[in-house]
Structures are given as structure tokens and as C-alpha cells.
Image (cartoon, rainbow, N blue to C red; front, side, top):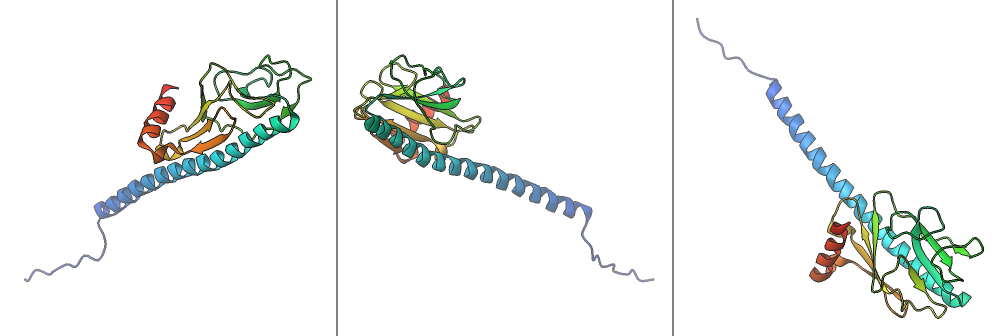
Length: 189
């Protein structure tokens, strides 16, 4: 009797398992890339929106001819040193760095997203940024740094507030020295 050759027309279970494992691996890679892209997109949007809001607040101080303060506050009255709550922008008529019921308040930009942090580093110790009635920030100039939940260079944003009160948006990833400084700021919180 002659042995017959048997042709195999189907795939083995092991081959199917290998294809499934490779597909799962590629899906995990795609999801992590999507998450990174989404965070970078959020940082871009917040960068532009907050820069415009900061410039609008300076303009408000000039227009009203009175000092305006920007900080974060959990209760909407007292400025706090950690910038992770809601924004608080108000005309500080008595200069006590706390919002009184009779002091005007301004709605400020989009809120800080959950798990994101803003770090304020002023050249003088303070919990907020104050634009005087002349539009300058001579007593509270410094840098606001945006830190995303997952540290990645594409999400880093900084707003530099000069003594004259002008606001400049900086992407730290464009310079090695500013990138390392921004990373250090975000790592410290």
C-alpha cells in the first residue's frame, strides 16, 4: 500500500494565537500613541486659550484702572499656593490678596483639567499674579508652567509674564535649556 499525501488546507490553532497576540500588541501601541496625541492636543488648546485669557486680564486692568489678581482657589475666595483648583480672577481693591464679596470677579479661560497642574514661579513670593492699574506685573512677574498627568515633552507649555505685564507663550521642547528647566519644575510637584 502506498502512503497518501494529506494536504492541509486550514491554519493551526498556534497560528491563530500568534496572529491574535500580534494584533493585541499593535492595538496597545496604537492606544498609547492616541493617548499621547490627545494630551498634546489638549496642551495646544489650553496654551492658546490661556494666553488669550491672560492678555485679556491685563487689558481689563488697564481699562478699569485698577489692580486685577489671578490665582487658583478651591472656595472662590482665598488664593491658594497650589495651582490645581478653579481659576480666580478678581479686582483686588483693598490689596489683601483675597476676594471680598464687593470686589468684581472675571470668568477666566477654560478650567484646569483634572490631574493637570499649573506651577507658578514668580520672582517674588506670592500665590497669584497681580496686574496693576497700569497693566504691569512688576511685583509678580514670573512663569506659569503647565504639567500634564503623563510627563511628555509635547505637552509642556509655559507662559512668561514680564515686568511690563506682557504674556508670552513658550513651548519648552523647542530649546534644550528651557526643556530641562520645565521638566524639573513638573517633576518637583
